Length: 67
Image (cartoon, rainbow, N blue to C red; front, side, top):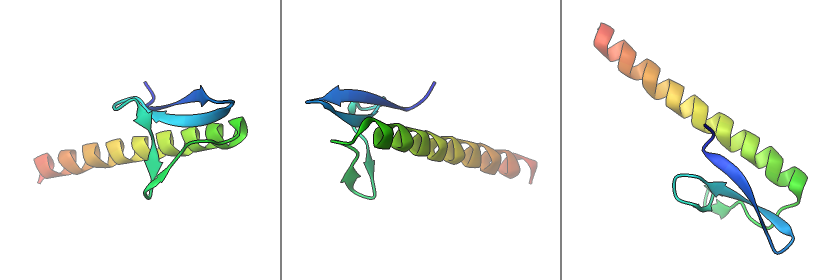
């Protein structure tokens, strides 16, 4: 399941964080009021960053148990 999705608001698109149902933020900037193409690209980027973070934590925990 992906953490970030799209929602249309007033004819423009917002990237929504599924855990909070609020507009996603990247470096303090809300991912809102974008064209469809921009919003799709941001969803891909944010979901990939989320996957990387998840896997990094998993690998780190695994390394600790093996040490």
